[in-house]
Length: 286
Length: 275
Image (cartoon, rainbow over all chains, first blue to last red; front, side):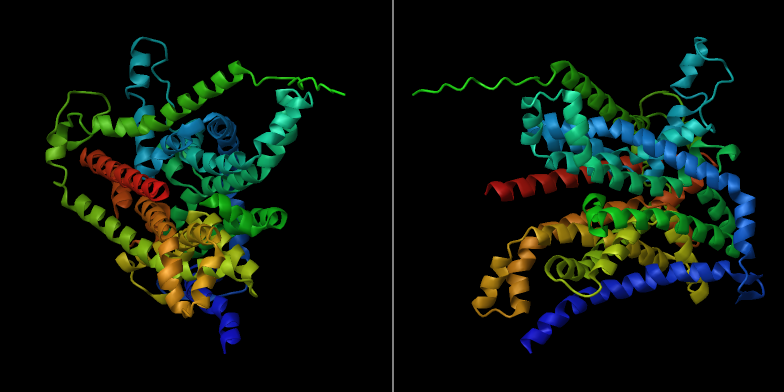
């Protein structure tokens, strides 16, 4: 009796979560795939078909937005990595007693709503705002100069919003590195650069990849930065999905686009979990 | 015979200059991090002509704070946000704790599949989660509103709750609840008297993280909200027509509340570890 209970325990314990995630995460993903294959319109209802025409149309029409999303996603993730690695490194190695204070300061944006953060940047970067306005008034910048609705405003917004998300996993791995290894390398006449390349960088690789994946996936699918900081020329795939749901009400198209985005990102996620294990990334995710 | 070992020469001392540069860079990034927050707080005290936030500094006023709750829709949206955040945080912790226990303490068939699903739930792009939930609600003909927002928020919070609580459970000494079992406690009693108090900080941490994620969420909520507005949705909708100063005032409140809560939590856990 007791042994049976011991065997059943993990299944009973995981049952509630499994049911919830099945009904409200896994089944919706499948039902979306189904909707992408549906034909019909909002008035007559939809029937399921087996044509993949919607996917072909979706890809042909929105190639540019896909490419742009992947470009913004890549650029913003690489820039975020470049600025958050030194910060995480300094806090982990030289933060001393105040490590948690520095981390707390980096985490402060989490206490401000995402949309407010983006809004504040729109505010800061606006053509006549307190940053560009005075520069234009004294003639340092041409009157027509603008940052908003350029791709760099969108990428900048994405970088700002992912900064803290990248510092965290990097800090976690860097903090775990045994300092004696670095000392040993120094004693064996490794230059600081060599010690960094041969010890610190390889040991922090899991954090670099975990952060890269999480930030990249979030940024490729974002539409808020593009909507508030960008213009018509910076439409990302997220904007198109949102528009097809709410403006043109072309549900099959929206579903096809989201399925394609999910599929592309799923490949990246599966590759990652094959290499590093699915459990590893959870450690860095929260 | 005496052998004297000469002190090992340490070839390179870590360069002070490099450390200084890194420190400056870190502080520059911290300032960059704070810039939009400072703008939000400072401009919440700026005079707002015609009830719209001005782009430049006009003059100091407390009027925005006096009228903080003057816009009923906005206040209502904030209340919706708070309700959903509290509700979804608590439910996520209740559903997630058993799974966290199972993952941290047992090896079972389907464990790696569970890990993968949890991971996918965290990593899935918000726009896809939102769109797929909307597809489901449309297929079920479920009217969109507070309930669907709540369902969606639990769906993305659950994975985070599991990960945070699991980390806490993994750090526990199994000897403690085994001792309880040896002393005749049933698993149920052992859980409530031994395990639960020990993992409580993890559960509280998970609730706080879920609360923040929920009150912050815009992308998933846009898809499942229907006509119901949450705070981020209201703000997003007001972008085209101009922003009332109350938006900055209320988000300054949320910011201050969050920071105070976090500091209290840190102070409490510090006292626990010291005592």
